[in-house]
Structures are given as structure tokens and as C-alpha cells.
Image 1 (cartoon, rainbow, N blue to C red):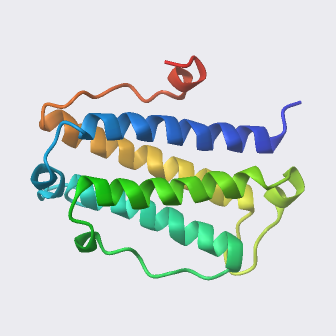
Image 2: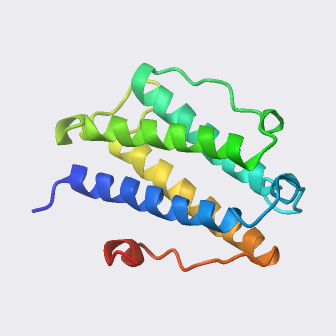
Length: 158
């Protein structure tokens, strides 16, 4: 029987893999396009990606300390590289956190959050998938390369 931790690690790896594909598609844009308003959800590509990073940071901090930091302000990130740096840093922190867990810790329900760790980590990965779909639409509208983000594509190594 597969351990829950193996599944969570697979989902975290899937997110990292497909996020890097997003960044490859963004490379064809200027900072102005990246930050330009878009009339859907969180607006610009920048806003979407800062939102995802901010939410992941909030959940991760909650898992580690029970605290929730204030959300990151997209206006503080004016370039693709500045967003990519904070995004990848937080994504790396999530991966490092998951690496040190065991199955028993995954099952623990955390006070103040009222969810088990595995549920929070599933929320993080599902939330990122939802926003990647929105980001892919914006990238398509900019004429950038997009892709199918089915998880089997990750499992098959494509």
C-alpha cells in the first residue's frame, strides 16, 4: 500500500514541474506585459503568481508556527525575475517542509487550522493547479506557448 507521504510528495513535485513550464512560457514576455492588468480573477500574470506564492507562504507558516503572515503585495514586485525569485523560494520551502515529514505528522490535525497537515498540503497543490489554469489562459491570449497540465504528463515525464 502506498503511503500518504508518497502521494503528497508526488503532488508537490508535480507543482514544481508544471510551474517551471509556466515560467518557460513567461520568458517570452516583457515585464510590462507580465504586470499589465488582465480583467479576470487576480488580474495580471504577476498578481496571479504573487497570490499563489503568498497563499503558499501563509499556509506553510501556519503549518510551522500556527501564525499567518500578511499577504505579499504584488506592487512590490515589478519584474518577472523578482516574482520568479520569491515564487521559487516559497515553493522550495514547501518542498523542504514536506521532505522532513512522516506519515504520522501528515495525519495530525493542527490547532487553529482545524485541518490535518495532508489536507493543507493538498489545498496548496490544488490551489496552484487552479491558478495555473488561469495563468495558461492569459499566456494563450499573449500568444505564448501553453500546455496540458494533466498530472499523468508529469508521471510520464513529459
